[in-house]
Image (cartoon, helix red, strand yellow):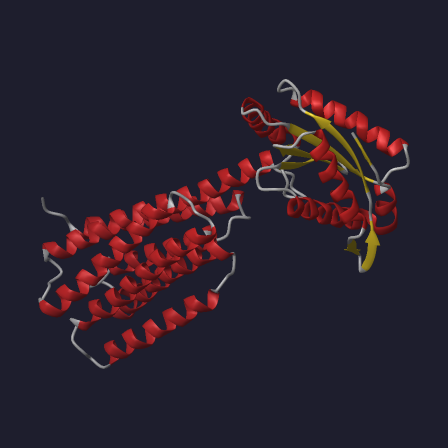
Length: 376
């Protein structure tokens, strides 16, 4: 099968412009996702550069060769930077200027010196191959912070494209390739396939991040990062059933910060939010990995203690109460002390909701007796 290089160039231009427009649209609707706009800019630069290459022989080489390749290298650099930004959120626009400037200086200097055309594709392929490998590495190391299943195929596509450019370097330095050589068309076809796969991979990574974020918002409290009530009930009922079936006890603590409205009145809602976050961090440090804790609503929190009967639950609750009373919390540049009232109940016959209702009754009793106490 023969491949026409001009047709491949045209398909590449159309692919880059259409994909670039799609990424701009995606960025418009999801501006909180870093890297999408940079990826779009990179594709548009590549498409523009490939378009200019198609006019080689009819347009001056300063445009059809020099400017075209500078645009292509700048586009690949923008894609590399956008992958880095997707990982960290940091914008390193200086990298684009640095790499594009270095390439322009080398390529233009080579052209002005009248060095043979054989070196032009080598310079371009070295830069593009290096940027592809660097982009692949950025995708991989991003998985250490945010493992996404779509990272692996995206990294592989980047690496394959890098290998194609490395092969181009080898061929250009060992063979006298003409524009009609079928190998060039096959290489261009391989790059087109890889670029299409990369666009799909980037979209998949963005969609996977969005899906994970929506799942997190659906199961956690946005302010404290703890489980929300619905998630606690879903996970708690499964764990309670499994624990009681194993013959061990489960107890529930319902905690309510004392005089929280006074904290809001004195320190504002920001101070109240900081207090809730500090208390949430306190609870996460206190519980065991097997236990569950959630923000039940407002200033109320719920803890499910596995393998703990009501006596043990009361001991844990008393430790929470005493440690919190002695814990200073920084709010609005001031140090305050808060206390908590806690109701304790045992889970019986897999009835977690009933146990929470009993713990709520015990909590109201603790508040009625003067607060800052534990009632079973």
